[in-house]
Image (cartoon, rainbow, N blue to C red; front, side, top):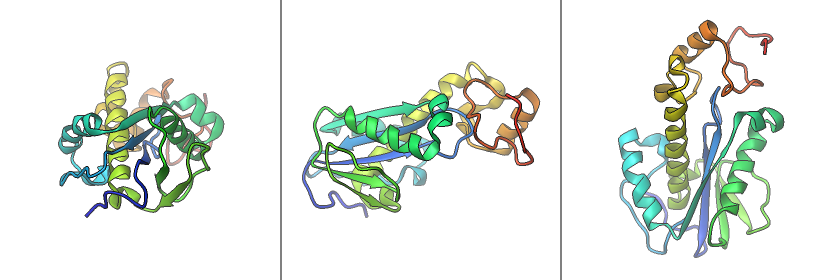
Length: 198
């Protein structure tokens, strides 16, 4: 069962989605939930079906004291690497909150201190604290929405279904059609790849 808070009122949870993808942005959510908020369905977004995530998104956005979502796109990912891009996305999402949080709960074990508030990292935190789980749902649903949009431009990669992750179908499409402007050029796109002509 998810805990409503860690220690403080006005805590912000933050999490990212899309870190392991071959295409598209890494997306971070940040959210401050109101005191006493609870939802029996809320959990780590990876444990929820797409239908449940989409059901939760408007509930979380309406209930939130403040929330924001930030994409860091493939060009910047290639410049600063995916770890730094993930942390940058979380920082920017936190910066966009209308209310300044008292404390930051971060999913995972890697983060850089932010000037707005102290933080603590929690491995599998999206399965422990409501605010991190909520941030994970927002990050995932907003990123999925973006991938469905760019799927219309390049339907042969089926991003609407695979969301840019390295599925067999996605890699077969890369073999056949090559890379798009949305692919991360510094990522190992194919298992046998030694170098990539770009």
